[in-house]
Amino acid sequence: MLYPSIDSLLNKIDSKYSLVSVAAKRARFMQQHEDMRLEKYVSHKFVGKALEEIETEELTYRISK
Image (cartoon, helix red, strand yellow):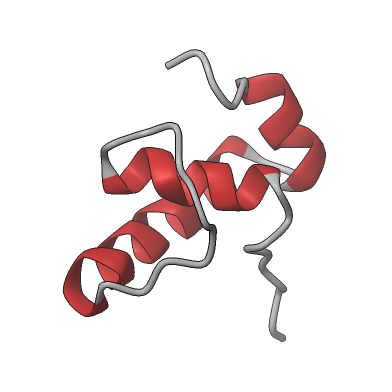
């Protein structure tokens, strides 16, 4: 995977575990509900699309206590 780079994604989300978790949940949601937040995606797969949303800060996460 060339875009988005792992380094730029880790600037948006603090750990690889959180990044994978957020991207997987969003990809599953996108697949089930056909909910797209961006106009155009580079990737054809849902996980890649979720990572692109994280890169553009269209998708974020928060830690609940």
